[in-house]
Length: 72
Image (cartoon, rainbow, N blue to C red; front, side):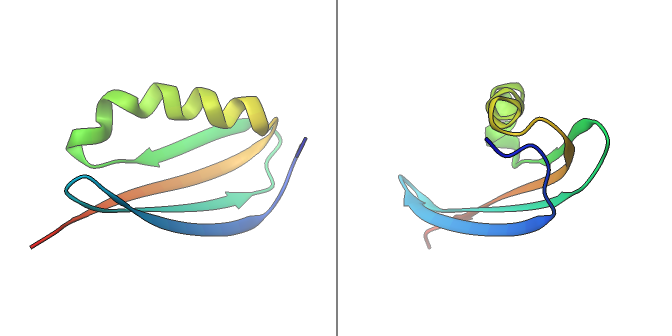
């Protein structure tokens, strides 16, 4: 299990109506904190996302950005 880290990750995948892109930037920090930016449609999942991150990461500051790109 990762306890602390500094890093960057980016992933994207096709979903029903477009592409979902996720970027995570993490910084070493004494406590665990998450700053999540989600599109309006995903705000209902914010607490679930934070809980799942907390299961895997014990400390650090995370900036999580979700971007939805609809198909034209």
